[in-house]
Length: 361
Image (cartoon, rainbow, N blue to C red; front, side, top):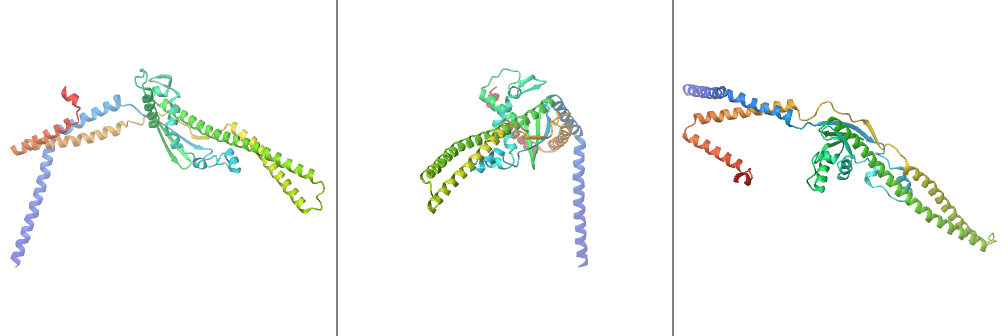
């Protein structure tokens, strides 16, 4: 029994030893393959890095980012004009006006983008005071496409330049542009248009409120005159009402109606003047915490990161090519046939992406 146990232990020892030898042999084979094709592994990442450097330095368009922080001075309160209208049962506000202004939805809207396209900017590439739609679409060339297509392209370009993030009641705006001064000027123009949009919105609400109050004044004045005339006629018909409780009660009712309408008429007159002031009042609806500045360095593309990624990609590609080449050199005829089949399948798959008109040529 002990001899059998010893035999099993010896068998396990030789089995583990053989597994270790196989692992060592495979690792050495890998190192030999890498050393054999070290030239390929060095040349390929070098070429890819050189191409990447040329691309990011001379071909890729630079992107500069200008940032700003803003918040709304009217963000959590109804305007005074809307509050006035609410006292009389008129709801001029929607759900958005009762809480913070939805600046991300405003600046990312097509309506706001079309407003920005009308602004003019100074650029190094296209010259001074060029319309934004020209800068983003046809440049210094004559427009060859339809006006609607150019307009849609410009709208998409404006929306793509803007990134706005909400941080509580503060909004962080980031503008991406091909020139640093252009990025700053675009951010300033965006804040100005946003302030004008909010000012126009509040003026519109104030104007609607003023129109409502003026209509109510006309109706209330008419009702007041009718109530006063009814009270006068009652007193003319009833000179002595001291001994009649019913007549006294009727007189009190008519007088109370006159007092109530007089109070409403007086309040409407006061609120009308307040609404007129609100309508013409000028104030900064968008408060700028950090004004936009021209960036000193471009944000994209990141040269160092792209070159490092290109280097790792080249090393991996070189290793794959080295192993494939080593396999092709050491494989038998069956392996050669399989490799040729793989090559043909890859070529056929890539050929499927080529348009037919290029194939015919």
